Image (cartoon, rainbow, N blue to C red; front, side):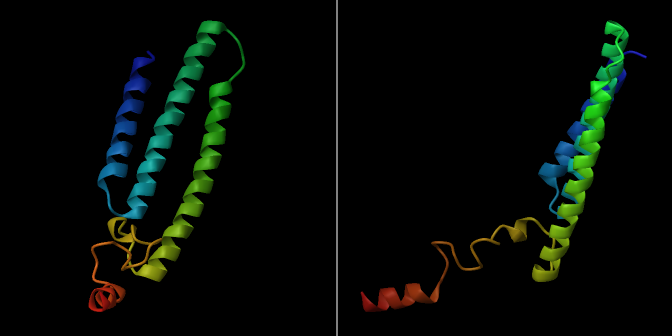
Length: 125
């Protein structure tokens, strides 16, 4: 099999995952898209490992070893990511990423919001 087939498939998987990360608002779908991107990288690692082992005639399978490490890291990332998403969903009631951007600041931290302190400052001035 030619190297172009898995490389094109990997590029399509990676682009699909990238679109999912950039376009989705649900945190779980974003995690699934990141997993799709990691699987595209794994496919590339294995394909180039097979291609280089046929070219060099050696038995060192570093691409397959890196794929195992990537799978392990991806499993840990999904476990921790899902735990964070579930904790945020319990606290906020939503897993919409656009609504979770103010987690560090709080609901009324912007300069153009109507905060109670702003009215007192204007009244005393």
